[in-house]
Length: 153
Image (cartoon, rainbow, N blue to C red; front, side, top):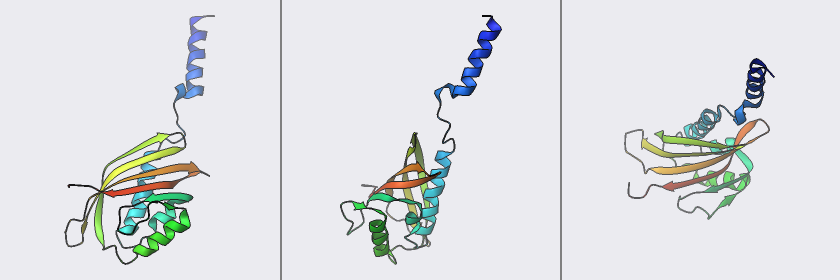
């Protein structure tokens, strides 16, 4: 086999095989951060149901809020929990600090720090968050969230 034929074969395999890279979710990080922001935008206006819009039916949730259950399981339970928080979230501005999205096939993990302040500039407690997303039926859905207050900040 000639060098040209070998080179063409190798290049063809690289193009067709993608060198083993997973190009299925090329924009996963941007998409997942946008989903999280869509929920947090609503949250910052006191609408606690933003996370319902992006969650899977079998979502689980851990929270550090007073009265939070050890683990909230299922979309309906999360919906009820969020409803219990209605009217308790002051309008505020927020920032997602140092977000990182790690993709493993059809699962992605978003970690970040949430920093916020009331509309008059008073800083709110800092939180750290982990959200796990799953790709199913052509879209990312949150399957788990874990929020906790940053200690000693």
